[in-house]
Amino acid sequence: MLNNNLAAPCGIYCGACRHYLVLKKDLLEQRGFKTGCKGCRIRNKNCVFIRRDCPALKKKELEFCYECDKFPCQNLKTIDKRYRERYSLNLIESLKRIKEIGAEKWLLEQKKFYTCPKCEGEICVHDEECYDCGNKINPNKK
Ligand SMILES: [Zn+2]
Image (cartoon, rainbow, N blue to C red):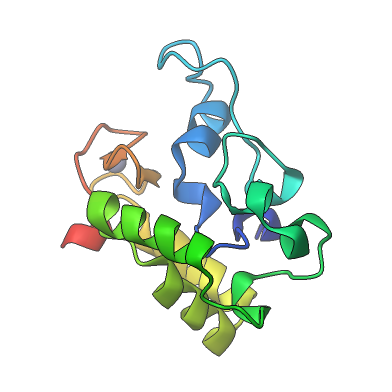
């Protein structure tokens, strides 16, 4: 079943996030985390970063950053840059894609994108690794 909580306002797919996967796979202790995350929309301090500094997201005036007059704001650009550099993941493009095809289709696309080609397990974009078989992979870097 599709979980709308997995589409973060900033364009990250929570299903590929370390904090989500360590909780889901029961790896908190093993990987040295105190807390995990059930997805940005359920709220979590570990999760990415924008909501903390954005009044519009805090007040839930926006579902996604692309809806904002200020899109892409400096806040988003900073995170986008970091994600592009570290993980080859472009959040601004991701948000444009959500706008184009809608969150539901985008979520299906993302789920497929982050599925391990070896074992059909779940790939973590932060660790660039399949959490089910250990396959080292970041689909953004193909
Ligand atoms: Zn795998």
